[in-house]
Image 1 (cartoon, rainbow, N blue to C red):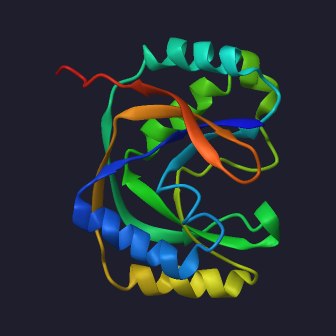
Image 2 (cartoon, helix red, strand yellow; image 1 turned 90 degrees about the horizontal axis):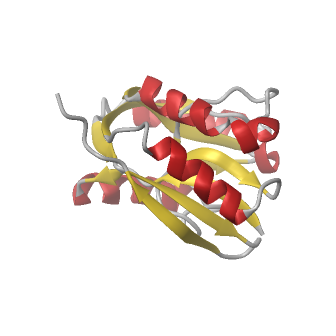
Length: 178
């Protein structure tokens, strides 16, 4: 079983439905497996479940919930599953996601970080065998001048056995007091 850490952003029903409609049309690999999410720790079998849960518990205490705003789609890394991918990337909340990702890839996860793939905060929305097709999807979405607002409020430690995916433990992020 592989373990990962994700965030399922909280969206309005309308925005969630829009993202899912795009994913139903273009994200055949993942739309029925997992909801719209930020991958923060990519699937690994290099740490135990208890070690990962304790590691996330320690780092969640240093984190606060925050807003994300998406206004563009980009072509993602074509290295995964021999397909190209299109991502929604946050204009707002980008640095918060990067910092959260970087904090998680310390301690017991330090050796799991892939330095050959730069981390791009994203919610995956499409995959195609040809990068040109994902680029067309991203360009068509960007022509709409969309704005999708969400909140990052939880981190989920998830398990994946090659067929099913489930939440093992969910951690809430407190609101930031100004």
